[in-house]
Length: 82
Image (cartoon, rainbow, N blue to C red; front, side, top):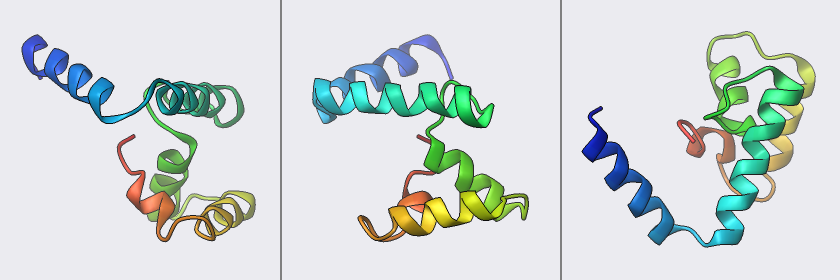
């Protein structure tokens, strides 16, 4: 992805999400790194979804996705790539 496309993506994200929502997303990504040894650019839900899809998720991770689905249908799948 070239720089111009990346900058445009950043600008669109700022318009799409409130400052509060972006802060929550950043905290989610921080905890993905600290607790799950995941990427700094990925949320916990997205990280767990990939592990479930690859058959590598543990019971806690599967339970966490099921818990989140009580608040939003298919939460982990929808968060793919965040």
